[in-house]
Image (tube, rainbow, N blue to C red):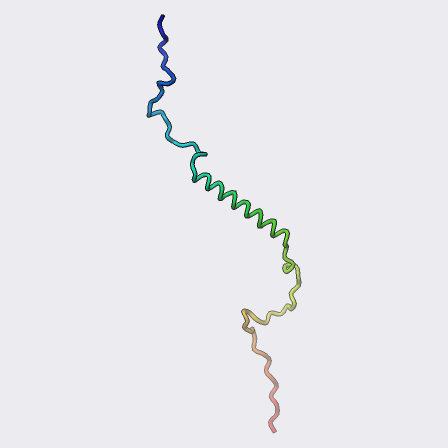
Length: 88
């Protein structure tokens, strides 16, 4: 009885053919990136919901006066001069 000339499955320990790359799910940096991306998306959704819930009425309200008189606390024009009183 002769045995066939076929290699054993355990004889495949050639270091040149073994991959040393870790699987993508075992790399911690990818998990941190995935977590930060999901956190960013959740924050954006949260801000959109808050913005919709608390819509500003100031955007639709009419301003008190349409005339612009001051910028940063400084008047845009000089006050009207008082009429000169006649001297006696």
